Length: 510
Image 1 (cartoon, one colour):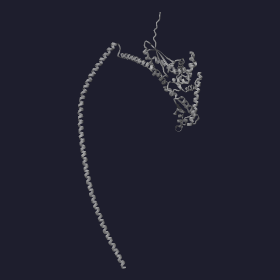
Image 2 (image 1 turned 30 degrees about the vertical axis):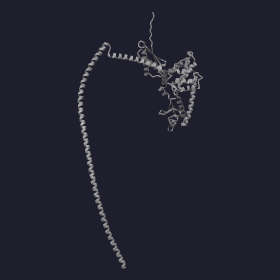
Image 3 (image 1 turned 60 degrees about the vertical axis):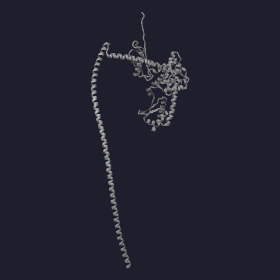
Image 4 (image 1 turned 90 degrees about the vertical axis):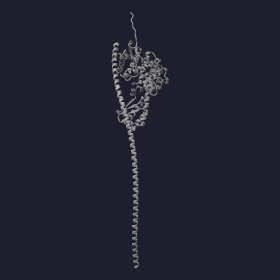
């Protein structure tokens, strides 16, 4: 029991001693830590103070450097400003000197202007006295003299110009007559814009406006297929219940028109159906072409034409010239040629054959370059027509000089058929007014005694006073009349102006 108590007391004493030792050790450790912290704080403060002093020194140095640069820049700018001020002062001095010189020159110029004005007034007075003296001596006013001189100069210029023109025309006829005729023929044939625009479209009537949407198709596939198959342009606009087909080839346009009419009548419009209807319409038009050619040959009384010639002849049923159907024009002209040939006692059948085929080239002018007369002659030659027929075809528009009576008859019948009133979209009233206007226009020129419109307005013959108009003035007058006709009249083809100057000496024996 005593031993246990002694052990417990010893344990307690040991714990107390350990606790005391621990407290002492902890106190010493805290003091050491605080001492080290105070040392580090002092060191940090010293280091910060050193950094601050270094930064302060660097800032002072940078400020000093900036100040020095600013002072240097200010000094440089000050020097530059001084130089500019000096230059400005110099310029102002020069400007003052220039102004002084200009002031002196202005005064001198003013004095010169006064002297010039005085001289001008004296010259004007002298000119007036001189003009009055000239008017007194000449017996006419200055305006009359001016008009007389201008008229003389104008007449002389016209004479010289006409002489030059005559020489140039003579050289041109010698050097390029054939080529010029070809160029003019092609131009006359092809450049007819208003007729082309009128005859290059066809209108197709629709049962209702809903049909337009079916013709166009989904996303335009039907109209694209139609235009691709027929080679025409299909125009769908706001015009109620109708669409327009446009194409320069009348046969292709007729096939497209029949195709569209079949599609509209059937109601089934789709790409496959379009191609089917196009082939059927193409066959129908080709059949109609053959029938038209056979009808024309039968009507003219010619039975031995080549089948290919009949086909080409039938194509002219879809061709117009100034609104006149070309095939009907050929048949009509062939009848006229037959009557003329009968009156002249020449070969009637040959004359009718030449006239029936004279415009055959118009069927293929859009395929071959050149005048339709030469194209038609080449076609006739290839299809074994006689030389007389070939010559009449190529000569009917003066591409070559006519050498046979049949060629002359062909020209005459062609002119009669195409120029008669009403043949080419011209009423009788309009026709008569155009002829009257043509004669009135030609009679308005001085020196003209009589004027006659000939050949249905294709030629105007002007009779002039031989005492007022000489030979050279007659040529000038013809050109002036032709120019005025071109400016003031509208007419198909060309108008020939013929000025006739005839001097007759008459005396009576008594």
